[in-house]
Length: 488
Image 1 (tube, one colour):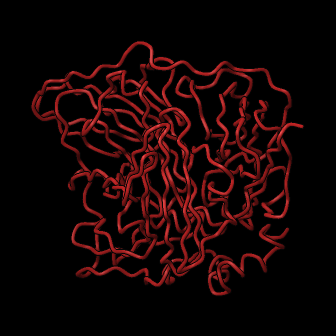
Image 2 (image 1 turned 90 degrees about the vertical axis):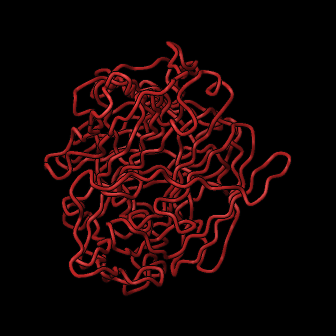
């Protein structure tokens, strides 16, 4: 099989360069020069990952518009090599938007346009996808819609959808895995009047939690090797290794984003206490869900509310990963409860009205598989080819898709651009309660079959992408392309 990028191996050579391709074929890219920055870090002697909960958590910096007009806010994000202090006292080369690791958070309002000028100061092509955004094809940041080094382009986001926790990340095919791993990702938080009127925790009590993992070299550099799940054994929260976060004894809204390339998380409290899930990928749920855990595959998001008023000042509560099989990766983040403060926020019994589940006009099946020997990924037996349209749907159509993981050991998930969907079943049984909302990404565990009802936007036509959002898998071909055509 070819690499599925403009005619096989020659296509990937044209994008990456022959040296990088040889690194992929040899099984890793560790230590290579990326975007003009060597992967070595500066630090005294052997760099060490600090013990869990010994560094404070940082809240990602918020981007500020470079200018605002009557109906739009304009931002400028520069993708470039940078240096971040991830491990204490160590300067680690990264790839970053505006020098921030992770990228700066953009807060947008429904109905008000956002224009983002992305400038590429990397040594390689890039493209930027607003994950979960309802945008035109030319603004979607498709894997072959590249911004070359030294160039820039403007992405236009209409923000015509409901409030949701979205995110943006690099999507340049065969490069997206390493680019995202090295830092090219950030949160995009969309608000609307209905959400604001609910009285949920807001301001400094509305906190993004960007989760991922990493492998560090002896010098503190980020080591990138494709398919290196077991080697990425340090958990990062907002770019810090297993930090602590001081919280007041009141309610907090945490927007939890799984921005890892491959790792699945199941967030839960070390006390076993319940918390409230209030949103899925594409916005608020119908009602808060009382739960003790929320599983998230790469690309999935969940907004949760934790009420720390039930804990005494001085108590420590750990947000842990229920999927972890190693003590070193069990703890994600420690909350240190401080004094009590006045809390006027609330979580209403009803949050949002979801669109009616319309009947489907077509059924499709997507079978995900990966060749363990070559690392190539396939959907319905085919690797991604930018020149191939796999199927066509009508604008505004509703379809039922069945997503099947043919691998019996390897985990996958599934993300579709533009459209949202509702999870109908898992292996013929009910979906997980944590999936009861609008989604754009869904986990598909080994041997599992998941049914979803997909609703296509009535306003947009053109070509869009669907793929496994385990980014190392999509980079190796587990991706396809569909076309939305206008009626008549």
